[in-house]
Length: 264
Figure (cartoon, rainbow, N blue to C red):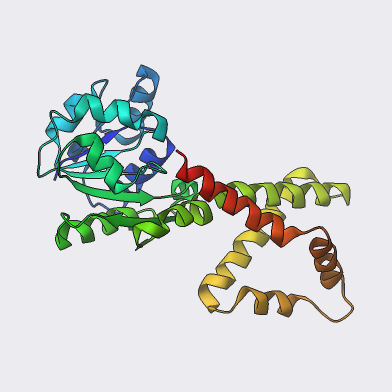
């Protein structure tokens, strides 16, 4: 099975790294293209895959083609390659906002199309990916797509109407979590902690909290209540966060991300 990547940025590298680590494919089974020689050389050195500056060369050689370019470049790339992509090629897009219907229209014909919304924690094997596809994709291809996405974290099938929400909750949220970790670290430094220690404690607290949610299956509100002793320090901090509209701000940020995605 030959797999091609058009675009070799962070998400493409995360997928390549996951596939190779799980031995789904070998380096000789992968070819990728990118705009700059610097990127091509770096990816070839790290993963030992074949690389080229030609998107068409990638598209015409592979059984699975992963479009890992930003949404604003997708139309240009498809225009370049659509004449050489075979009808039986499985095309996987990770571009936000580009629907299955949009992709099919851009290719100008019926295609086997899959949309995936991975996130940056995929870079450390802790990704979260939503997957949807059109009805032309076979069950075997559907399961293979899931296997690819599970190689670098959690993945699941979703209806396409939910993919924008998945992109916000799974894809955009890491940025907000990083802001939270940074703010927590700043507070630690203000209280006298060394900066490196503050980052480590804040990040570990977030990691451990997320793991509790995933592994216990308890409602986040229940877990929060477990930390809040009557008259204690934590509930006082919760009071301040509620006073400042913490939850409302997070919800507004995610809704804004969804709305922006629909305009891409």
